[in-house]
Figure (cartoon, rainbow, N blue to C red):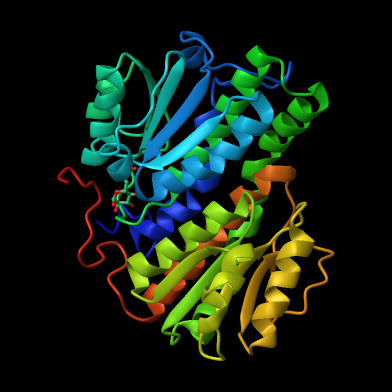
Amino acid sequence: QSAQKGGYKHFMLKEIFEQPRVITDCMTGRVDWQRKEVLLPELDALPVPKRLHIVACGTSYHAGMWGQTLIENWSGIPVNVEIASEFRYRDPILQEGDMILVISQSGETADTLAGLRIAKDRGINVIGLCNVVGSSIARESDTVIYTQAGPEISVASTKAMCSQMTVLTLMALAWARRTNALADDTRVNAITGLSKLAGQLEMELPRMRSEAQSLARLYSTARSFFFLGRGQCYPLALEGALKLKEISYIHAEGYASGEMKHGPIALIDPDFPTFALALNDHLYSKVKSNLEEVQARSGKVIALANPGHDLKVDHPWILPEAWGPLNAFLALPALQLFSYEAADYLGKDVDQPRNLAKSVTVE
Ligand code: G6P
């Protein structure tokens, strides 16, 4: 087992550090770097959806939420994202030309598979985004796009989300080519940004880990945490909270930071810290003022930020800047490492957390 862990203490840590390679593997054969075009023949086999429904659970659902904005903004296709256990029982409106995208690392999650079958019964095309080759979801989908992330052993999903986000970025670009909705310079910037991403992350991971280690030591005695973000950082905030809950058993809530004032901010006190995503995007100043509200109530704040930020938080955690929405690929491992280090510091069974299974094949 220790050989399988490649010298890392846990599979989770190994899988977090595999992410630069995962990004590269996931794009292999799928990008023409010269012409700056995406090649996804799996998608070209189907018409462009009139409306896309993304259905998934857990971390895969967060990846879907993240992909929603990219697909809508770049391709102009309206996207609805749903938790599979809700979708399957609510008699969703599915119309001609709609398409379902089911996202599942294992390809065996019972609720996600049920969502797929509802779509198929109604004659709706299904795209499967899976990691495990030949899994039930892969077999039953009309077309499957593999994430090519390699086996994920740790129960808490890490590299799978990174690979799903990579494919979602490619899908948004592939559809945008067909809908003609995306300006050429954005496409070129996106593809150039993608080509640099693995190298940027590889360089940053060791520093990220030591930052995570020192913050985890300071904060793992907290009983509760908020994870806040807005826009495309909102799904990452949800994922950061999920990771912390899953493996360290510290209570954590992921929240859209603009929504804090409608109730949750009542919980803030010096013992209820906040982990915020305050990256350099169009919502930075909004997040900044949301964090000032938290600090005005004596809440401690850790914030992921980019160089040049002017936050006055307790612990700014500076990440190198990628292009636009690709900054998520640098923020995600920071969140994962913070949870990992907290759980490890608390002596928890990181790879096999209590009450959880890698693949949930029952309802
Ligand atoms: C389980 C795992 C999670 C995962 C979720 C969905 O709950 O513990 O880490 O995100 O299932 O799994 P899937 O294989 O469908 O992506």
